[in-house]
Amino acid sequence: LSSGGAPLAERIQPFQSLLVEGGARTLQSFIDADLWDEAYIEHTDLVLGDGVRAPRWPFEVGEKIQTDPKGRPVHVNFA
Image 1: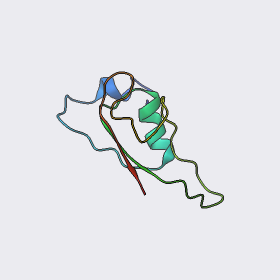
Image 2 (image 1 turned 180 degrees about the vertical axis):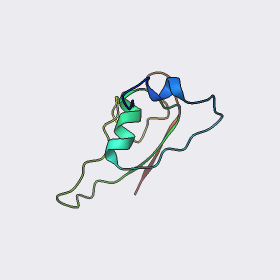
Image 3 (image 1 turned 60 degrees about the vertical axis):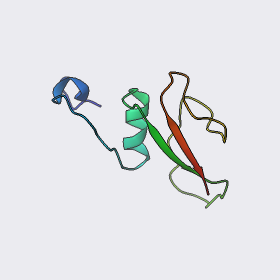
Image 4 (image 1 turned 90 degrees about the vertical axis):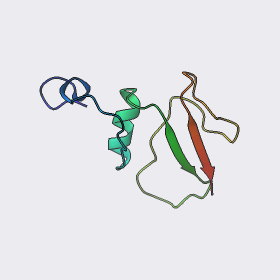
């Protein structure tokens, strides 16, 4: 999450809330940089075929998960 200069987290002003919606690459960059404090995950076992894979989380997404290993809230909705 940088654009040639300082990382994004060092360039932005303090903020109360930030909602990140985007494609897999955008979401994955925030996950990889550990720049999140709460997640809402929509999950289904339905396979649509070829396409862009969903972001990968640093933990197993399952029905019983309510927090990640660092204690951050994770809300999973199974469709």
